[in-house]
Length: 331
Ligand code: SF4
Image (cartoon, rainbow, N blue to C red; front, side, top):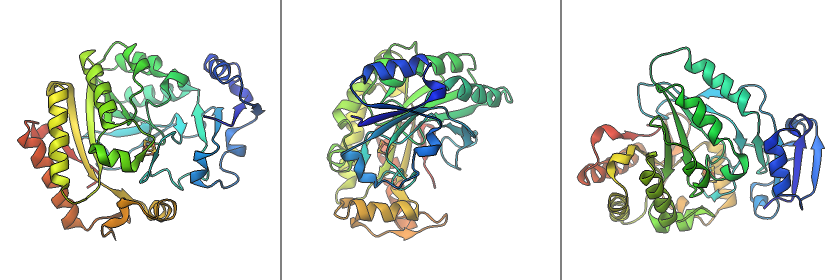
């Protein structure tokens, strides 16, 4: 998967670094001072990830947790995300990481103790519900067999039942998660779309069947789940496709295992939209009309996207999902 590993001198003695290097012992490795000295310094085209991907291992310095934008999660509660990786092994055509960094190379930060200390400090400032989301700049589960951080975060959040952790993913890589004792405040949330849409747009990601099978297994083990119907991409018969998707979910999973469902329509910053047009000029994504909306993001026109959100919400309600579990994302 990787053509070269670049590792900061500061983390070479970390047990996880040793484990990763052992796993990839055939790959050339180079010691470096700081990830920031090299990562993204020379612009590397996003689609080069198909041919050659480097792996950086280092420490996250600077701001490790950030306040999430409005409507990021369930309303009325503060949401933060924490940063323990940059970039992703998958290749969704709408991915917001296109052009976000100047490189698609994968960066894994291994100083979870320092990231966790900042999370803990924030949690201790309140007794009210507070959310933390892993994987704003990566997929939260895809590489957990390598990165090995899940036991650390499970132990941390188990101490603070008022604090919630969301692991957001499109992966079916649940091996490490199944080793953890479930905690009601730790929720694994899966982005789901109709099966043909995943195949066409979420390149290299597990299929709908694969994701649902992973969710089923997690539910059977007592893990809490979330679902993101996000991004919804309009197409002819989208209502029929989402009706079938929701039916399949309801037939596969007990609704009691689902803590929330978010619904969000496809959206881009203008620079990501530019990248999508460049990287995937023939994508079905680009078939609809887009406009620049209230926050500068590129979206479907407002009445159209509200109509889409309403239709999917209605389908959820008709299939027995309770209204308080549903929220509309980024609107
Ligand atoms: S799974 Fe998420 S982070 Fe990874 S390519 Fe897809 S949209 Fe981007």
